[in-house]
Length: 383
Image 1: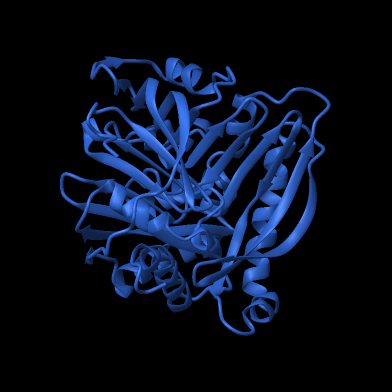
Image 2: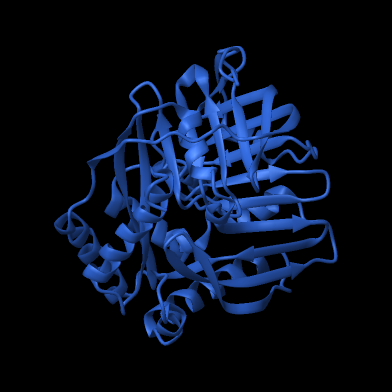
């Protein structure tokens, strides 16, 4: 398979033991704070914030459109435009002419080397500063994250083949997009739903709470006051987010177990049935970025996180929207890495929600378990 010979972006969505491949884009743009890059022509041009928003909010029912919003794009919708660095990318928006199903490439044994990771001391320093905001009442929960850097041997398709080779280990929103001209791509095995929208029905399923998947794990999580508080707070936040569109959101399910490689999560299922059409801009402005990867209250907590983390998250904790004629689905990009093929490196983000019931050590260990949930799947001999 020679996908990179024309230097144009392509995307892959695993469907069982096959891939849904999108190639030959008719439109492909990478957006920044004040500019956009045409990934087909290579031309870069200046744009205003208004032009950017108009472009991404278009809802022309393109069946092969894939839109990824970086976490930093959320500052535009939450009164934090000054928090966006000038060089941070905000959106990758690609519309493809066609799709085809193909058998995935054979996976190759990957050699992974971790080249950078936060120490416990680094984590605890940020944790303690954030914890002070909880004690002051500035925040009730904040989702503290850090990057982990790796070197690998292979190419982008090798990474994707390994991550997606086993259908039992695929997240519901697993996907990959590669831009050969930039030698850069996004690789995601996300299990988390920001929203599903079909007609006038809008649903969200926030995940909060993580534990190693072992015997008795669900009982241990069910008995945990900390995990219960995490999920209840974010469920209430998401219900309120949906009520910004129309005050009719309902919690359908609370504390549902979800297994992913090596881990057990819990999530809630919240639904809004509207009497009128819900526009894409309403949905994104109300829900993005997801409350489970920011905290509560959202706007204040995002400002706190920018001071604690002092870096961009990028694709991690952003969202990828998949458009079809009758439905739009959107992930929260956890279990997600940005890949540089020129350096044979990738950066993977991990973290978790911190409440007054949290301890630095337990949260640090949970973060490391989430790193393992991604990297171990990449290595065929370990999972």
